[in-house]
Length: 100
Image (cartoon, one colour):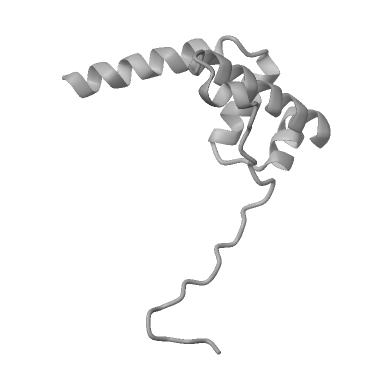
């Protein structure tokens, strides 16, 4: 019951934050969360890739300001990089196997 109440509150908070975005910014965030790459989002929305990146940046800043009004992450202006293409993972080193 407590977990469900917290999840519902989080959902309401997120929806309120998304409501602060322009329609294009909201679409970009939702499409990125669904797994599309930046180029795929731009193509889906019929906008240029640079315009998509700019709108995405502004959307993340606005979301942070709404979700973190105390200024933690929002105050730094730091937006994590979302790669336009999936990045390969480096090979894992297994213990005891030296590659030299």
